[in-house]
Length: 363
Image 1 (cartoon, rainbow, N blue to C red):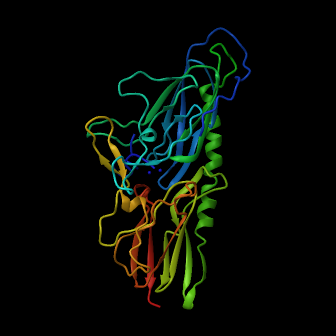
Image 2: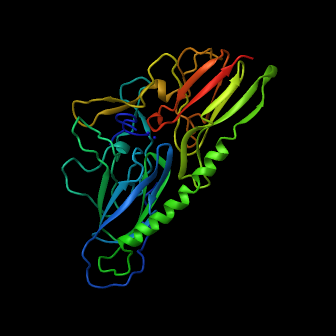
Image 3: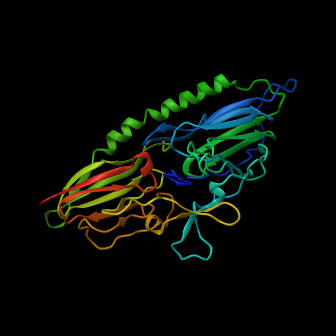
């Protein structure tokens, strides 16, 4: 989840499977080399274009090297999370003692394993270690610096996978060779590999948008039309995504139905709020001890459909639409009976510009 700490002020945001693949890469031995600081990138893109990948996706470093991930998309948070064989946690969990619709972002996916002020962690392949939410926007009181990079010292040789808790298709791998290995890539070579991978994924963006804007329609009952709109979309490589409604603007007639379907790995909503303040994705509930509870409001997380037809009034919401979670919907439909112009948003990615308009004409 934007599945994030505070998506506008706080999501948009807070702050898989790791496998030791047995054995390390063959590398020419030599004297112990000086530990290096290696720069990597989590994500790329801008605005509604999201390239949810680590750059480069695979890297080989020496034991003792420090890896530091920065963010490539200025407004898209990520996590860098080593699971060490433990299962990937759910993105939402119930709030203890609350109603069935009281849910929160899972704390272990949003907050770092390193306590504030502690030294940089060392990863040896046997423990759960995570950055928590890394974002370019401040995640605390005024004056709090952004938590926009994450560093980790690589310890024991081996090959280790890591994931982003916000984006299921986003995975990376680090191979750690002994500290005296000599044939490892330089920072310049790592940067060149990252640029090549980024270019290949960015090349998918225009075809995604072009294909998505070809809105499909089919005959509905009593002379009406059913319109099919994509809510987000991905390329042949699912790491290339567009957080847009395709098409963003659609004109229909009274009595027509619009069906929105998720077409990518990220979570989205279809949310109409005529005459009401738009909903935020996260409500931050401070706690006396420990981190706050990051509540996802019930009118965002779950279906709100007041009647069978939309007459231009009331709050309507698809709930969180997701192709990965079997208990969540993958589509949402509305039949429009009243002429007018109706704006709507994705409550998860509204801050990135994911919004649309349905214009309903007299029949």
